Image 1 (cartoon, helix red, strand yellow):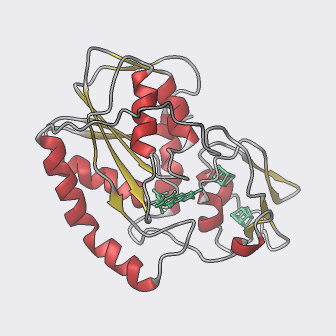
Image 2 (cartoon, helix red, strand yellow):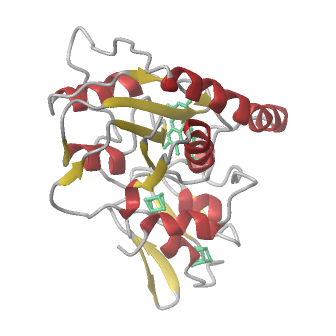
Length: 254
Ligand SMILES: Cc1cc2nc3c(=O)[nH]c(=O)nc-3n(C[C@H](O)[C@H](O)[C@H](O)COP(=O)(O)O)c2cc1C
Ligand code: SF4
Ligand code: SF4
């Protein structure tokens, strides 16, 4: 099956999943980073099969994906699938994507989630190792069902309420402390261009989608969540096959 796969990833789980999926589907399937899409205007989608690979945030999709799908203009009625990556609970991510697609006269045909190590709530070292080792097999399984163009029902009886990630906002109070060296890596990996260097110190704005890319990739662990004491500095997670350049490359030329 030839599919255009739109993906977003902060710490590499969805990036590696999207690439594995494109390899499994074959036939010229390609991965397109959501962060590389034009920031305004209509996004025309002409493919016969369209996929979305993204991390689940609070049982929802990341704002960057919601916003881009909101501007998509699909030609005809493509087969639309998604592969959410998540630590433990997908919530209503597929139903919310389906609801968004429905407002465009489209629908989600299949959602096949892939469990991956957490980058918000902690996965234990054992869980992390196990999820990483099972990733290729689980992606192959997803590809099998997608290639067969399986269909399921994601309509909700009632409209789903917006979640806290429905719009941007730095609700975890993400900040850089005095250990910031001004290296600029967080500026590069932020998908929303929400970080700037002021007097050699990283400053976060309000256009944050709480992806935690900056938090996990900062080489000196200077970034913390000032509004959430319990998880302020916690742990760092990065998919072992992914480098910071792979994350920043999602922004393309934008
Ligand atoms: C703000 C935020 C909220 C999250 N919410 C959920 C959740 O509701 N359920 C879940 O299973 N995982 C949740 N996660 C974990 C991520 O979905 C998971 O680690 C994902 O694979 C990360 O993908 P990435 O490496 O491509 O960014 C959340 C992560 C973040 C940063
Ligand atoms: S990545 Fe860390 S050290 Fe580098 S500018 Fe950002 S906060 Fe500062
Ligand atoms: S400031 Fe950090 S958490 Fe917020 S969008 Fe940018 S990289 Fe993600």
